[in-house]
Length: 573
Image 1 (cartoon, rainbow, N blue to C red):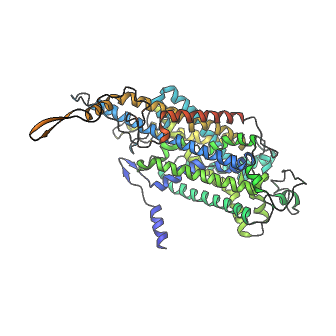
Image 2: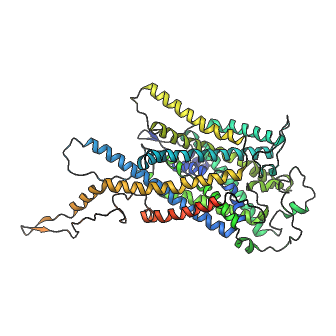
Image 3: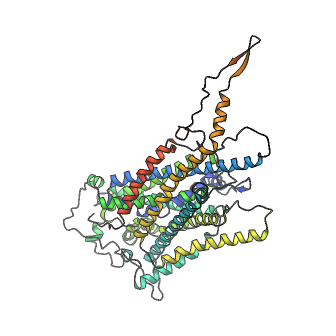
């Protein structure tokens, strides 16, 4: 009991106010970022793993996770350089009237009282057109993310709840396959489910991060529980079960399953399928070209969180640990995706659903164990709970970037106490309108398009620009700008360190010459650990040459993802 009391005290501990900003503990921030990153992304991972081949999909997932982490590091480095330029500009204005010949050295840091949204970074380093392009892509991507979330919630609720009034009927999962919107009574049930989902999620979209922390940590634990159930069940079946590792009996031999619940009955029943010992190595080493191409945007979509870094990590006081914090986030998400993809694909094989939790429909209605049925029902309803956490976070990120693009001010630190109260009210009204616009538009779209696969593919393509291209361009341009601005200051500092120093030896003044050369390199941009732009967050992949190499690799992956758009993965892939 004492341990539980201490845990509750830790969770309910109020954030401190530092420099006018209310901070929250780092573990709350971890749940914020993880909830935003994972969202609905992991639900389609097993389907991609099976059709691409497990070894191929596992390798691709690891590469995408690594590139996503590097892109996030580039972004926070650009934030630190923007802060250095902002500080340099203010100090230069302050010291302009003073006779001080010493140039100002760069101070690369991310401060608690100043937040640089990606749209502002684009405006600083890429100009106004770069900002507009980024904001346009961000609007499209966030709307697709929220649209997908609403669609997942609507399909999950309408497939598992019997509405006993009017023309509403329970939907079959097959009614959402390859259809823009289901027909007849299922369509009405689906739209009614979207309405119920909107009643829950819309109020959350108007809360700031600090006001959502208890909800987010609760939903984060719920997500971890669902993932644990998925992986544990499939692992036990693969390792310890003598049954055939698929839904063969459900597809072909079941006598008690009804059409109402037979959402996987459209799978082909192969009369030559042999029960007994199963060659797992064949399943692991198999390669499906179409499945691999279509899996790339799915993996990218599951890792895109870069536009949210500034917003979600802003209340975190320990900014010096941001690099390692992001490493933990991407290591966690990549490991979770790998475990889910491998285990679920190995057990359900060709019957792996596009939304992996739907593989538990038959178990929920026919399992003999009450505990197993309860777990299956929890997994079936989980997608509706899952998107409740990611939807308001995506709306907050989009609202702040739009507000920055329109007003040129940070949504949190853009006002001062001496400003006109009427101006503050107008700014609050603008933020309210932006939140309402971003929150409602995807809900409206989900009423007319409910195809999960197509939405995920296009969201993954747009995610390439946010996840790889813009961070790389910002990294190179911020390095170039800082090198240009701080070159003379660093040069002066180096030359002062190499000047002869007179020392006294036996009452005689002797010039002591430094062993450093007085010549300062004129071309400093490609120097390793360049002091004009090196930040505390740098890695080996921060060097301009490494940025270019990884960007070329990302361009190739983007081309493969575009090539996958007209492809349709089927069971014969």
